[in-house]
Length: 388
Image 1 (spheres, rainbow, N blue to C red):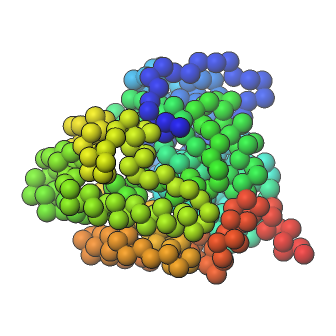
Image 2 (tube, rainbow, N blue to C red):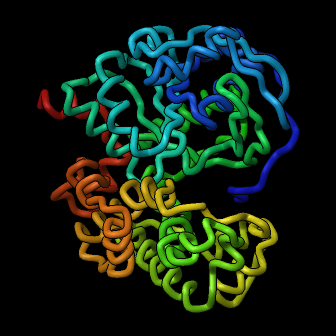
């Protein structure tokens, strides 16, 4: 399965008569790409953003202008900062925001979710679907809605101005898994009416723990902190930033991630294998594989430490991995060190901000109980459980 290869030909097909209606939550790079692409293909699309000011240029133009591998003007049905209005006609709700905002959006969307809704965190990072479900459930919502998560963002895109976005590439395969797991087939079938690149993932634990960015992003930025601050990112992040010594730390983090997955009965892909599958980059060590990856050539480092590689990937990727490790008695000393260092560097408490086992709603569960919950659990399941 090639997870990070790209398609440079837009998918053109007739919209089926019973096509799902989409709402996209988030008007950033990915949100504009998702909303614009879906609308350009003829689907009914509503766009929501927390800040109404961000939406005003889109509202004035009536839609989004797309450039790149997909080109054209995409008119939107609804452009709003009102959550009730945004979800009123939706069948599928695509949550395309940084993972730090998932909990907030879950709280705001909870009163307006209804039977049949499909919510897709795009992507979920680690534990996204579990956290979203836990927040919605804590509000007393017990509708028959499905929460799902994608393993990664389907687009490589940048918005050029508030009403225009350039899509540089569309991934060929993006695994999606649902909560409860037995709804995954229906979720993927629905999504594939618009985007056939979505494929079935095993479960939300697999999509969460195959989050390779959790290894490559925060560890590499933290270990290059001095160089980033001295040069303001004036070096190639992966080729210059990954030395043999630094790669040993990344390999240790990766081994801990794989061990946590194994404790849950999941075979997670190692970072070195992922590089080969995604980029045909081989090597006897992680260092060699990274250096042999032509796709990383020329990618510059962040210009500072206040970057999503730390602010998002530590609390929303590393913290939940460490939390699962603690719950399952799997040591994660290297990952925990990175969480501690990232917190020190930016003066934050990422343990408090991050996805803990309590925030994911799995505190006190065994590995068997967690596996059972991701396959059977959901808002409707909670409703039936409470009745009994």
